Image (cartoon, rainbow, N blue to C red):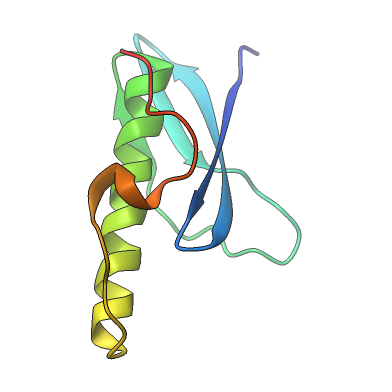
Amino acid sequence: MNVHRFQHDIGGRPYQIEVTPVGTKWRAQLRRMAGMPTALMPFYGATPEEAADLLTRWLVLAHSRQTSQTGRPAGPTGHDLVAGPPPVR
C-alpha cells in the first residue's frame, strides 16, 4: 500500500499524519499509536499533500479554539502554529 507520512508540531504537540489512497482520492488521518485516541474523522484531498493539509488546518483550528476557551491567548492561527515548512502544492 502506498502510504505517505507527515509530522507537524501543533500547539507544542507532535502529530503524525498518514495519508493513503482511496479510489481516486487520498485519505489523511492521525497515525494510530498506542495510548492515543483515534476518534477523528479522516480528511480527503486530490493529493496526499492536500489531504494532510486539510487535516493539519483542522488540528490548528481545534487547538486555537481549545486554548482560547481555557483563557490562554490563542496566538496566531493557520500555519503559524505548525512547525516546519508549509505543504507543497
